[in-house]
Amino acid sequence: MNSRPKKLTQGDTVGVLALSSPLKMEQLPIKLEFLEKLGLKYKLGQTIAEYEGFLAGSDEERLADLYAMIADDEIKAIFCVRGGYGIGRLLDKIDYQLLQEHPKIIWGFSDVTSLHLAVNQYANLVTFHGPMLSESSDILDELSEKMFQQLFAPIEIHYDERISKLETVVSGVARGELIGGNLNRLVSTLATKFEIDFSNKIVILEDIHESLDRIDGMFNQLRLARKLEQAAGYIIGDFNGVDEAELLKIVSHYLKPLNKPVLAGFKIGHCRPNIGLPLGVEAIIDADAKVLRVLPGVEE
Image (cartoon, rainbow, N blue to C red; front, side, top):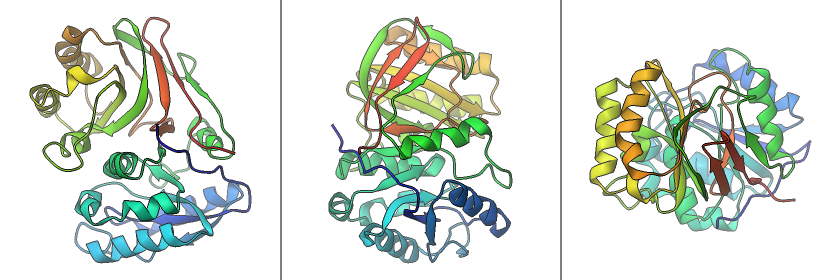
């Protein structure tokens, strides 16, 4: 099981990084105000304001930013402020041993899925799948904001229908390590050193701006790679812009024959609210009672 980073305390300093696509500068103040609201101080990465085509600075600059944040023991957490694309270019250059020696909270989603998977695998560290401190140029909704409290105390998370309507795709109960995130980024790890391990895991899947045929293609690729059959269960998050009934047809086609519990309708991903969850901790999915229970992501 992965080790948990230490909890945050008010007054702690955290790092704010752009490791993927460039951030629109008008969105930065709202993100920093949120950190101040949480009672945190912050240091900004050098590439926050950088533009290198579709990237927030060169690979070397973004990597140097990450290293500086990891090595700085004053920094207790690293928050990614933008998804998009770019972290995949850094994965084979990151010193995971350094992160093991200086463990800290890592928070983000979307393209950050690539970093979550690699860190869970090679630094054996729990990370957090959650919103980028704001909803583009808007403040976070109350529930998304509330989920940041799990960083300040070891809190067990219970996700049930009080948060969103859930649908049982396949009945059953399963226990396993919670992993996953963006479907596109999961599939992009196949046939690499960073290939995702589904074995006995509860897998979260979400995505955005993908057509039904591409979603089907990605599920099929995971099937052909013999990944889908290995998981203990599935959490289907938000597939922003896709007809839910059509999405569930695809999910059912690939996952029903496996007879592993599958629960859909989670507000996880490119949606409001976007519920933050720790990855690399043990979770229980009960598809009949429609509940996901997740152990705390931080330690005292």
